[in-house]
Amino acid sequence: MNGKLRVASRAMRVAVLGAAVLLLQDAFGQAVGISGVTALSADRQGCCYVAVGSSVAKYGAQLELLARYTCSFGRVESIDASDPFKISLFCKDFVRLQLLDNKLSALGNPIFLPDAGVLRPAAVCRSSGNGMWIADAYRRQLLHLDFTLNALREVASLDAYTGSGEQPVTGMVERDENVFLCLGGKSIAVFDKFGALLHLFSVPNVAWFDVQGGKLYYLADEKLYAQNPLAWSEPPALVAAGVERCAVAGSAIYLYANGALTRRTVAPAQAAPLQP
Image (cartoon, rainbow, N blue to C red):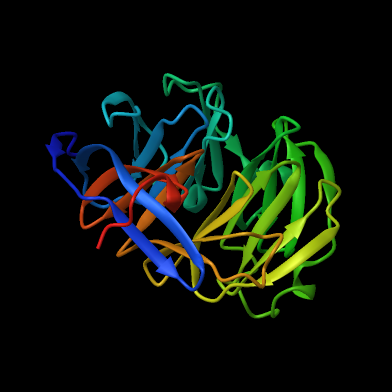
């Protein structure tokens, strides 16, 4: 991984779609050159976690390198940093989950998901109840387990919400005790903590999504949008274009594009004059 900082001066950008407007500006005018990012996440303290294959790096709010970790058993598919003191790495190809502390030191041995009968985990995310949610592509169910692999609950088959021939889940997060799932890259389903379906939103071509500050951020066709999930009829705001991967933490947004990681802040457009 190339950790050399590339400082670049960037102008503020405003993106408008319909009546929805967001102001996106650089926080420090810095960029980190990184090649081949495979996963990106951010925590509530504003730090960013970047995976390149089996290597993970933690960056601070000024994009300074804070720590590194190398996963000994393969590529990191996703990172969940919703708890900055118990970060989880999901290695899909090796059906394992590794927990790290805030210094990126391993917390115990890797969790081998087949020990719980989960042979094809499609996505994993942390649970606020100190456990994890797993989308099981073999049984096509949403499972809730603790870290000792005891089953807490499971819901009905996900085939009710997506075609039986499709990958049921391509991304998943828990926010405010609700579980958000991306189904086949075509829609986002919201379940409560008991596994009951609350909402099902149609969102074509979703490559990534997160929920922060009451907004649903999603990446589709290399464009980052922000949507009010409580007012779905309102048009989404186009936050940035040409984005390959991103992560959101409060008002901070980390964007990865063209081999560079940048940190931006998002604020109401009326806080500053619009830029051409």
